[in-house]
Length: 326
Image (spheres, one colour):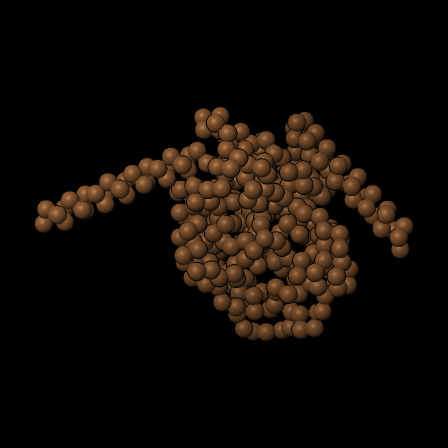
């Protein structure tokens, strides 16, 4: 019995020491800035950390469909509303929740738009558990930062300086036509959403309700990812949660995607031309809610107008070159 207790005590002491080490290592390795050389994980989305506090009106959350389809600078240009794309490639809902919680630490958005493609991406429970472990002990996520760690980083408090001028949007210029055969064919069937995904959806919806944030579901155009079965499920889910639902895979007045020109990869994602159409429609919807107010603060207007000018100058130059080559 004594031998057992002795070994048990050693095991407890070892585990306690390991935990203390991991906590200390996490505190040291956690990035103090959101620059690419510091963060190295989806820098575009983490650019929101450098946005001034409580200046973002709308959060767009989802996978690559979001950063390909929504251009916050165009929404600013048309309505003076500030927004940000919190999106990464192949984004699962546990990562969407992380982005949402991260943004909520410094922002008070009035509207959260959740793109629906990721709601149907199932994942194993161990992925969710590992992600939770990364949140508690960031050493697992940022273990490779020791290569660029400086002594002063150990004592320096976080100071995020990298601002993404395009606010998470990514400009894609290429066009690759889509095959639309069978796209959005009528069906009464309803697509399945996994149990784990439902948990994450309910967490986000519950937080929005508690914080008096309007939650909106958005299905961006995609011949590869979307169908009527998923649409039917989202209609039911939006009714259950009391949210608005915009499905841009269906016909809408004044909105039409040209599948010969508006997609960059055979219908999977929008390119610049498709994003312009999606953004215009979504911006008009945001304006119709009556929730948002045109920003008039000089500092905000100056920063966003500067970012908009840089973007439009780049696009105008590209479009001029494109027109000349045709």
